Length: 259
Image (cartoon, rainbow, N blue to C red; front, side, top):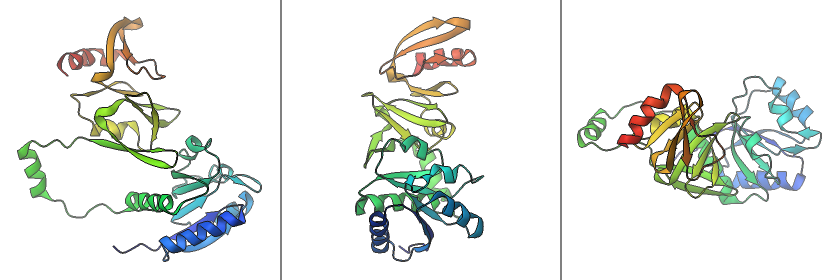
């Protein structure tokens, strides 16, 4: 497989960590070109004004003169993907709000860095230019399901595959998307709720309101609620209200009776 040559920026205020990251990148992707290195917010903002935008950024969070979020919040329409590298795990949710595609905790291991790079390569790969119409026709004729079967979620330094059948609900909160598994664990998803809804089997999944999609297996009880709505008792219940909006009540009753 031919590796793409990328322009890369490194934002890091610890010299040993900077040297380690450079060495790992050289070992994993020697064709990457490091265009810029800095340890401050001010210097990075100045470089952004004067230099061509990079293809990929590796950024620490706590820098010499502030948080790296101070950089990305000041750049309108920021589209460059960022892989965050930090010793602190409390910023993970904030990182995904500023175009972060991964979050690595120091000390960074080579295999974790490789996974992050491959994730970026998958996300940036161009779509296929040729549609396999025969293959598509075969799927339709055979009745094979094209619905999503699993999610890949990050749990600290590890990536976990979770089968769709093991998920209780998927919801949005504070402009982020979360997955709640049947065992009650919550994971952050990089995709918006609208996209995920289109990938789920409507026989098993239903969007009860603008921010929640639930699995039929999680429904334990249905009760009437204020203003002709329904309230669902789910297991696990999660931290949402589990209220079916008025315009979805009729469809939800049909779904619960058929699913």
